[in-house]
Image 1 (cartoon, one colour):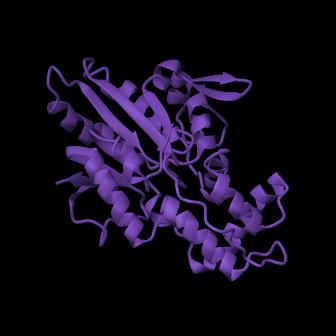
Image 2 (cartoon, rainbow, N blue to C red; image 1 turned 60 degrees about the vertical axis):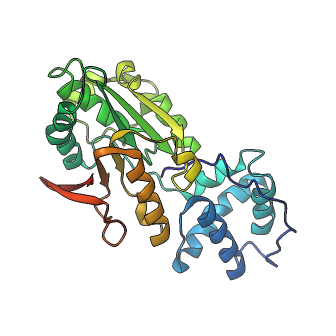
Length: 299
């Protein structure tokens, strides 16, 4: 997932909230309080049937901190979370990070064969940099895939063109992994022997991405639901934001998509997950068909 907690919880302290929980089982009142808090701060919406899922994830952190209840953890988050980095750990346990190199290959094929040549034609002698945003970048595999494909397939044809990839996520732990750039077998399982040999070094810790590719990508924590933080994300030619909207309700989807629209340059492209759609969410984009996938072009 992809977000930032820089302006969360700057509110007056309210009376301590009690859930009247007699055991570690999460009550309905506690669930409602927790999911409202998470929704207000991240846009992630836990549906009625996800109570056990949220309960089990929060329990891991409660056990680690040796707290006694969901109530105690909530009050810690609400009153001190932004002071002791506990919010970062909360976001870590409530988000899902499923990714690997060369995932959603048809989108990358469309980027390399159609979109980037189109974007390059619009570049001037002054502006020769392509900017791509991997929103919800998780541990960085998507961002690095874009960079190494550009370096291998675009750079030789257009040596004067530069690329900057920005990867963002709300989860601080996966951002640390992305910056490190070392991956296990699971992450590289779809990587061809050619790319594996050319752009990875096998070490005792795993497969380390080539320093040249690493230098093309920047990572930072970012909350897609944070309107203030999102103002800094602008002038992108292409945005990848896959498997994020499925965790939002309609209002959060509309707000996030509007942020993404504002972040794109005119005629910029947006890719979302295969299970996601902008139908009923935004009419600002034009649907563009590519082999085995679609993209959304800023109108």
